[in-house]
Image 1 (cartoon, rainbow, N blue to C red):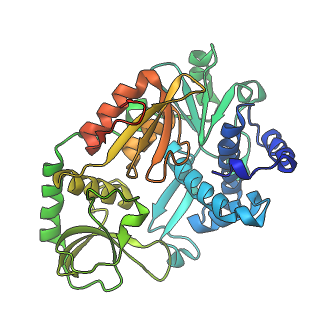
Image 2 (image 1 turned 90 degrees about the vertical axis):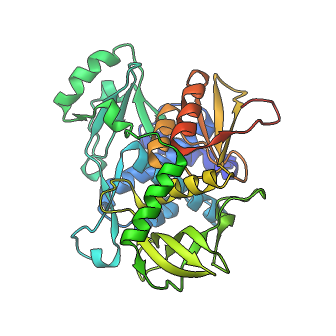
Length: 370
């Protein structure tokens, strides 16, 4: 997080940014996350469509108050861009027809101004206007709360606002569709289906520059530490292969003694999910079937009515969107995972969802909380 890097002399800059970006007051920890997301949102209104790397570079330049904090800010920016895609402000598309698109196969676009009304009455607002134009009148804008990448309205008149917003040009999204319906199934069944597709549609041949995501073991390793060059592995592995331009491609590969025998590009043609989401779910299934499922644990928030849910392995979008909308990403909870804040009343439901859909298991922490 960059909060510790913000010194007293720099507080004035963030306070001015808050005013310029129409951010409501909140705790400073929340201010930093919300401010970074708002800066990226504003830049995207002027820059998109553009490659993700271009938006990230511009955001780092805008937020870097001290050259020594560049790495921390870059990490925060990358996470905020991901959260803005999950929250609905940005859309990542591949195979677009645009000037220069041959150099970047995936581009970021601004989603149109939209909203979703949840069952509890809260209204989430997302999307970016052209040139980041303000698309809400002042009296409604004053009721918008910012929490990380999310913007929401909890006002007593939220129900009536849902009838007003379409007239202001915002499209309404159904809550059930917005939360990305996801079928629960056993990891063995999911993995068997992916393995069958690999055998049927996989391309034979070697991929000499590929990196693989090693399977989980009883030795605790972070997600980044699990990435390595293949050695003598045999079996099914998730891999990434570099390309001249753009991010590396995701593959599902069959290995024999460290050499790729067959590879399948992700996502599959009939899969609407992002390549990384398909790859992560496949790895979660592999680890669960092998007896080393991904871990999650919770701890009480000492400063509020909520809990922090820490997950050891990256969440696919169907799970992450639920947690981002409930509370939001709060950086790294510990060196091995990622943390999300959510209301205590929602903990049991979200833990059950992660167990049934992505095969995480609960781990007791030092406080005895699961």
